[in-house]
Image 1: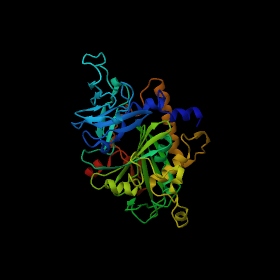
Image 2: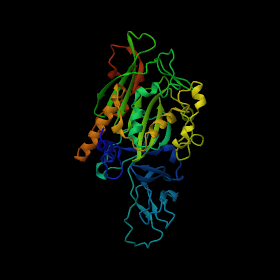
Image 3: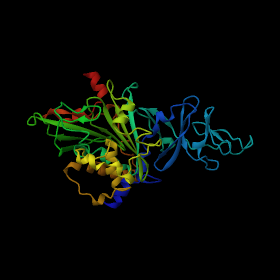
Length: 425
C-alpha cells in the first residue's frame, strides 16, 4: 500500500477525505449510560478531531455541542446543567440542546448577539449509544438503529476503551479472523463442542485449525466474508464456518457464541486515537453489563480510568506476565481487548502499511483497504460515501459461526439478524 493511500485511509481530521466519509454516517458520541441523569454532569466526547460536550437536560433530551462556548471559547464541560440548558460558568450564557441561547447574563436584553448559537449536532439514542450527525445540516440521513437493536427491548452490554492509535489498524484487527486462533488461543481454546461455547472465562471452539481459508463478497454496505476451518469432528464432510460482516465505515459484526451476538465499532476520535466499543447482545440470552466488562477485563475503576483509558498500556507493557506465559498462557496479557491493544498500538500511531507482507489469511484486510481508499477518492470527487446510499437495514445483518456441511453456502447465513432468525425458527 502506498504512503499516499495510507494517508487517505487513515486521516479523518479537518477536510480529510475519510473524515468526509464518516460525516455521511451517524456517529456514536458516547454511551447513553454516561449521560443517564437529567441535569447530570456533562461529559466530554471527541470525534474526527472535534471536541464535544454531551448532556441530558431537565426533560431528558440529549444535547451535543462543540465544547467551546461561542462567546470566549471557555469549556462548556464545566458548565451548570440546569433548567433545560447548559450554562457556561464564565459569563453565564446558557444554551439549549439545539444550541439556541436562552440567556446572556452578561449582555443587555437588546444585545445584537441574541441570535448567536452554539454549534449543536442532531442527536438520537439507540442501542445504548448517543448518536450524532456531523455532516451537512441540510443533508441529514434518516437514522436507522444499529444491528444490535433489531427490537427495542433487547438489552445490550458494552465495553468502551480508548485506543492510542489510528482507527483503521484497530478495525483491521476486528475483521481479521485468523488472529483469534493464535493471539486469543488461551481465551478461545479448542474443545469438543458443537460450536463456540461461552463459559465464565473462555469461549470454547470446535477447531484447532489456525490457517482458515477465506472467501469474501462485496456488498452495498461494505462486505462480508467467511473464515473456513477444519472442525475436530467430521472434517471430511463438514466445515467450521465463522463469518464476519463489515458495515462501512466503522462497524463489524464478529462471529457469535452460544450465548450472545457480538459487534465492534472502531470510531476515530482524531488521526491517532480512536474509541473501541465491543457490544454483546441477544434477543433471549445475552450477558449482563458487569459480567461482560469483567470477562473482557475492562471494568471502569479497576482496569480502566473514568475516561475509559486503559491501565494496561504500552508504557507498562500491558502488565504482561512472562511467568504465566511459561505456565501455558499464550500472551501473558489479561483480557481479549488488552491483547488486541498490545498488537494495534505497538504498530505506532499510524501503521506503515507499505511495509506489510500480506498472505492468504489477509484477504479481508485487502478488501477493506481497497474499498475504503476507493471510498475516500469517491468523496473527493463529490460522490456519496460508501454505505450512505445502501438500502440494506443494519438490523437485518448478522454474523454466523457453526459446523455445517461443506455443500452449504455460507452467504445465506449472514443476511438475517439472529433476532429475526430465532423468531422464524
